Amino acid sequence: MKLNGKTVIITGASSGIGASAALLFASEGANLVLGARRAERLEDLINRIAREDGHAVFCAGDIQDEDYAEALVELAKNTFGGLDAAFNNGGITGVLGPVPGMDRVNWQTVISTNLTSAFYAAKYQIPAMKLNGGGSIVFTSSFVGHTIGLPGMGAYAASKAGLIGLTQVLAAEHGREGIRANALLPGGTKTAMAGDDVEFHKVVSEFHALKRMATPEEIAKVALFLVSGESSFITGSALIADGGNSINKI
Image 1: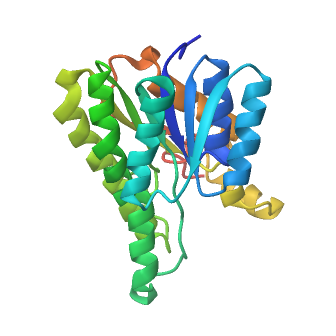
Image 2: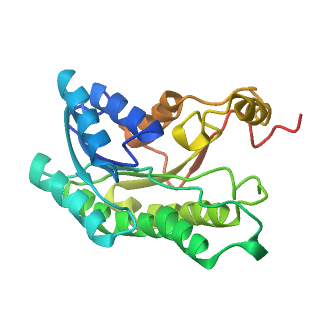
């Protein structure tokens, strides 16, 4: 079991990649602290994990709130005795549109949700990992803003590119303490954020060299790799798991 006895925080855990990661990590022996805004979905998820003999607790809240980042870490310490890893997966796309017409509130909300939340997460998660002798912190970034720019996604691209820069600095600052920091860059994934329009999915699929979108479970497996000791010599990376979207031109 790749995470046997390890305590892991997962944000954005109420659906999609986060929920799939929670189920997978629990099956690999992790003690989980799950975060998202929708308490009822988190409760359903921890009940499902409990039925399969897993261990999970949750705290509902908004990742834009610094106190919430601290609360998740305190819950991990008080419930399971410490923190070994975190998969900071929560995020939004925001309202899409060209930058000249973008509302300032939309820009600030996307940056706050996707990037400032990562600062808060690192601020509290890393000291807790240090007390445990090391750990792994992972952020969900994107190929958008890294290998490609998509029209209408200026705020999203800026926030996700910023995550990669933050990841690199954290890796350099805390490597000597046994703490690894990495960014996971998924391609198009069939989650609630992607909607359920079949024709839209067909268009998005064509962007990828594999000519399909990912399942949340596929991306969760990459997150497991980065969180676990399987990636023990990987830090400061932007790991692309995008089905060839970044290199596909036909």
